[in-house]
Structure formats: structure tokens, C-alpha cells
Length: 135
Image (cartoon, rainbow, N blue to C red; front, side):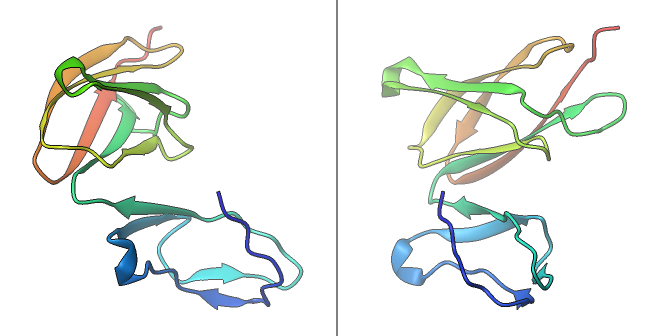
């Protein structure tokens, strides 16, 4: 998390310096430019792309609404990798940096059936998971 203070009202475009070896793939809110109104404060999330990553979106299978605060666990014991993250208000989370290989992905959320799948990572992967709401 990084806070930037004393910005004047205006439209702002965000980018990542080439020396960071990362690419900006999305912003929330989006699209750019981001408008900052006079006297307002705003939070902007920057989604970055590493050489190998997974950009995950979790949605309700029936409504396609994003699922906020879904638990996404990505793991591969052979690579000694095991990370759990939560989806944001847009139902999204980004796992990075990763190495090439197959990863197990488990997704669960309150009021929904849990699901799991295997994702093969060779570069930047985008994955959408749809989960069933429990009545």
C-alpha cells in the first residue's frame, strides 16, 4: 500500500516504470484516467503483471456478480508454494510472482459451494471461477 498526498483535482493516468519489470494490467476503479474531484480523496488499486502470474476473478454462477471476500488458496507443494488471498469488491485477486508449473486452486466463500481446479502457469494467466450460491 502506498499513499500519495497533496494531489490537485484533475484526471490521473497511472503507469509502472520499465525498470520495475512489471506491467500495469488494470486499475480499480477503471478505466483510466481516474478523476479526482476538488476536495476529495480516492483509493485506486493498481493490478500489476509479473512474468508469471494468475489474475483471478470469482463470480456468482447464476448472476455473474463478483464475489467479495472469497478465499482463494493457490498451492503447489513441490514448488514449496502455498498462498491464500481474498477477492476484492470486484471479485478479483492477483497471485504473483509465480514460477512455471501446475498449481492447485481452491475457492470458497460464505454462502457458496467451494470449488477447486488445477491451473497451469506458463506466463500471465487469467482465470474466471464461477461458484454456486447455497440457497
